[in-house]
Picture 1 (cartoon, helix red, strand yellow):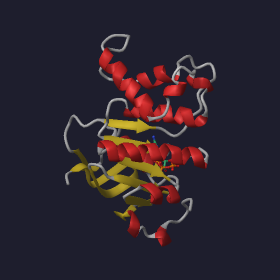
Picture 2: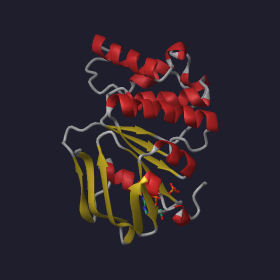
Picture 3: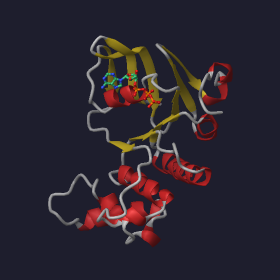
Picture 4: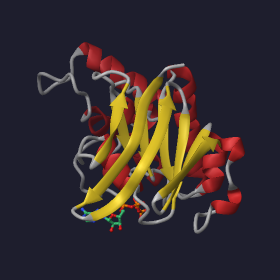
Length: 227
Ligand SMILES: Nc1ncnc2c1ncn2[C@@H]1O[C@H](COP(=O)(O)OP(=O)(O)OP(=O)(O)O)[C@@H](O)[C@H]1O
């Protein structure tokens, strides 16, 4: 199977402060990989480099092809009750092919499909500001999925959600992973969730990294992570 993403000998720094030191990683198409690490170890820095916001000091990041699409789901953030968009409008913000201020028929169909797939159709007209936490986070997920990405990055997207909502969200991600052969990078402190959903792991420790199949996770090396 091809690697959708290959990271070789990657080093990242802010000025003279080295944060990532000689990191290697391979992600296959359709693979669900958990990136687990304690606070400050460099998880966000690594994601910023994947998204092209940081230039490596050394090594390289290679995607399978230049047109590869990435979807990004942030950590849960509450939106103000006055936020003026409906859930559908909010999800539709990410439609990249938009050339006019209104959606084309093709875009409307894509939007409708992702709303159905993320169980948001019944609440599509609800103002996003008054939606429940679970609905808001599913709307962020739908926004990330509406352009049919090849790679989905979940950046601590389940942190601060209650357990039912976390499982609900990751069940949906897992359905997409299987149905669309989606590759997933799930950044988390939550080891039980990682174990439930991921095929493989990258455990980030200060300046060193351990990776492997989820079944071989070295639980004794987990340190300060939620178990
Ligand atoms: N813009 C920046 N300039 C300088 N140092 C930074 C910058 N952003 C992050 N850092 C430092 O780099 C280190 C890694 O930060 P990063 O946010 O990548 O860690 P993290 O693993 O994502 O942490 P957390 O789990 O708390 O989100 C930290 O010591 C942080 O203070």
